[in-house]
Length: 335
Image (cartoon, rainbow, N blue to C red):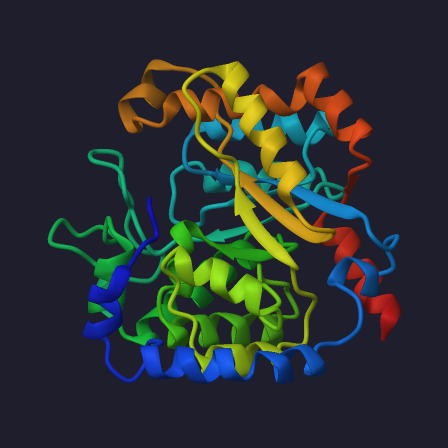
């Protein structure tokens, strides 16, 4: 989903979201922000070589359907990608978590899910729906759109559901390596983001938290529609787990060859530092085609990173790959 919440949602949640006067004040304080920033990017702080692009190829939407699990497991087993996250409310979540339990060296986290976006293939909350009514639509499922979650859910309901999803995995005997957010929903409101990051720190499980000390990074995500205000920037400074320098996703394309080329262009455009790149691999099937109109992009993404052309490209570019397990190992060594 396009996460451009636009001025509409900025104006309909007063007091929480970023506004023009705040933006002006932040821009006036850019120099102070730069002075405050610790030396080196997060890749360098974690001990990776200076000036290098350190990349995590991360498979989203594991657990959504069998097709996603097949592609994700294969990629991880063959070493073509570094990380994945499973969706706790979805029908194939248990399958992915049982696999992760018997593959402890693989990096598998939770794709915390507060939306159910497809037309007919849907799911409800992990919490009893009557305990989180603001997350539930008229069909008894999670809302399809991020904006509906932002308009209807309370932060207390979001916190309850996030905790329920993490505890579902732990009750199955699997402590996730990381947590992130489906469709960016937990960054749709600053109060959502705050409780999400507080939970990450409480459990000691890293979230996909982005270093907001760089004004250029802040500007990039604001352009994408994320309501980053000064409170959010200040709160991120108090986050005690490792952060990403940047976060992005595999671009769409009209052909497989174009798909590879636009991905190469993305890699070349990145600055040195620690970047997570998400994508949604799935094997082709009639069911996948019935679920989502993005099935072709997902099928190409299930083959692209095993392509010898892409493997050579990454080598020629001097890319260093990592995952959340390695990041946390390095982070704990810093303490």
